Length: 222
Image 1 (cartoon, rainbow, N blue to C red):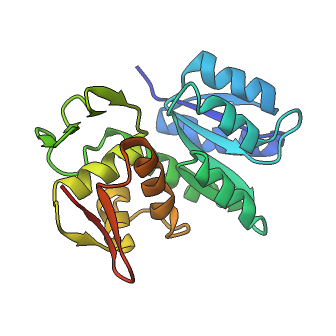
Image 2: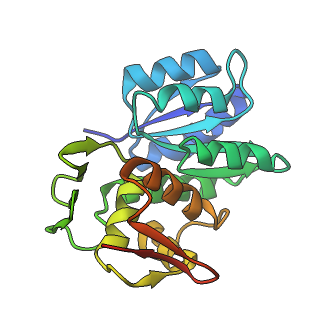
């Protein structure tokens, strides 16, 4: 079954251009040109990855992202205007996995899409471990996390970050080291995306497990 990618943008020229780059790579490409139809397509088509423009008619990309995050953890790359730093921060805080600024190189976007698809299939380091720390259980085989017997829903990036830290319990990782370990060195955006995703993990599993070492990085505490 081919990998399905959804492009949501109100500029036909961008949809046509990006589609022309993706289809020769073997991807199945679906498009939507406004916020409401984009949100519906995400939930209906269940794509492997979504490229989502922020500036959309009917419902902007931030609202679409907030809406679909209640239903799915699909990997989302935001397209933002170069000057709109707020869009990037808000988007990452509510669940975007990556962002690309406009105007962009189609080749760069395709590279980021490929990297995003690889990250979803990666199990940080060792794929056969089941780690338990008190009430917290991390299973790399089933890609699941539970706390006190209750399943916790993490995105692919959140899971890989948590697993990377937990597998080296007690070791301090800098942001750069975590980007290299989890993103594979192919991430060129804001380095503090690590902080955003770790903040989400803390909210979901409790704040006691991941410690910030000021000026250095982050450490998993059993």
